[in-house]
Length: 200
Image 1 (cartoon, helix red, strand yellow):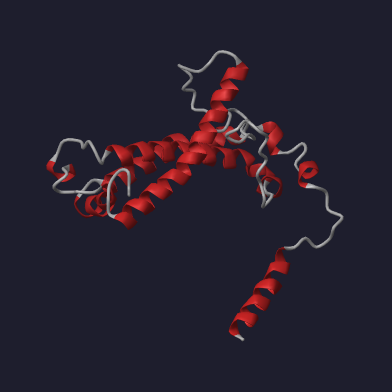
Image 2: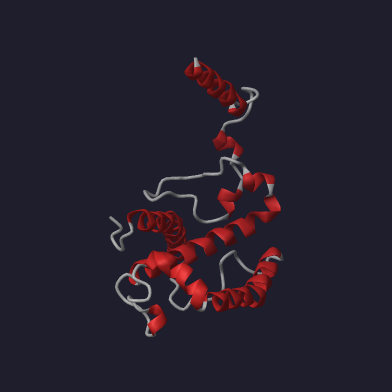
């Protein structure tokens, strides 16, 4: 009897997510002329077209499209650094007794140990200062159309042609998206298994 009640509740709740009418346009026509045409990165890892916005945030909050891309790039870049840093600390540590393998045997324990007796509060302060001095004016300039999202002017090694540069930008987005999933998986697996790299 319980299983019948649960199944009927699940079926009833599923209808809440069904479309209200069948006269809506398809997703391909709804996304025509959208954010996917304005920004690089509407491709998946195979190079096929990938226009993923199931909640239609880019249409609902159109003035924030640049902010969404800026956030995606920043989180992706941070996640790429985090993946490398998380794996590297299983093999190499910076000098100092506080950071040694004896003081912190596993990378998963570093967060709590360094909050209690380390420089994590200083790290928070410096990141906050960076956001105040660099990120806030950059986002304001982006909102005024003076810069592209994620562009901090560091183009020393950038390709000279627009096509090659856009390809690099797509690669950065794909690698960042993968890294955001990866760091979550690495942190979860290392805590659950209690082991370092390869977290088995």
